[in-house]
Image (cartoon, rainbow, N blue to C red):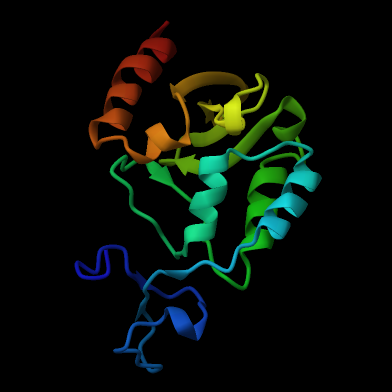
Length: 180
């Protein structure tokens, strides 16, 4: 990502250690780089305590790997919230606990972790126990948070997905569902 400078320009306030070497304080947009994560198991355990739900092991490892401003994965429709070293805990708590009504989704055992284009969210579905908490990922439409649609089997599958997954999902599952 850094070599291609894809999504690597931001006007968001970020820690100095995330600036590329060509940092110029006079420029409004700055080029950033991912950095080693400072997320700890203790901080994730604290988050799980507030959620009263466990996070998938693969997602925990993802959060402990690198910090980023924006992350582009092969599945172009998925956007993760900013993951900055100085604000990650508050950002995750706010995103997971306060979507629409505070705790609304968490009370339904759904852990919101990403946006899906501008039409909805992706959530871990913790209603069924899974080995290492590798829950199914469900899509929820902004218009109807009570109607969940399976998006993929787990976080690992999401991260290994291809560019066509969201296109196929939108054209087959969503368009078919909304036409009926």
